[in-house]
Length: 156
Image 1: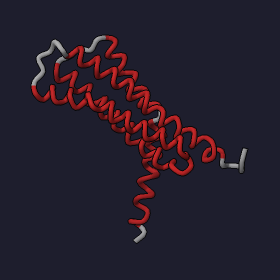
Image 2: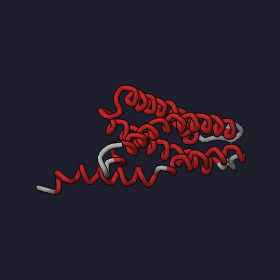
Image 3: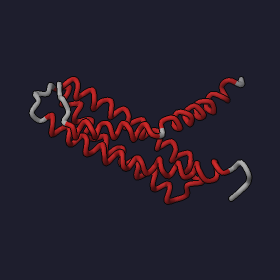
């Protein structure tokens, strides 16, 4: 299979990059459905201008996340070896973005007094769970990137 001790870098890490890129597309689709459902449930609420603006901004988030996912998967089709760092960056940024959108959706529900239906509540939990699955690995990768970024600055 390759040199001893190289299995993670040679096999597991590239597969993780593929999984992360493809996961963005599924999260974008789930988020699109969730925000549509959120709007349906908020339709009978008297939303103030701030809440209306927030809902409108949230409505664009799945399209942006889809664009990131499309770019990441296009890079996978091109050459993962050459674009691995870019794919990892897109996946990390996309997950951070999705996490922020999930928090903003929850905040909008709370500020508008919406008690979500069981279906909407389940969708919110599913997105949170999906974003949490690889969270520990993404934190470790972020710490590595930070150390690499700081290394040239601390050796002066």
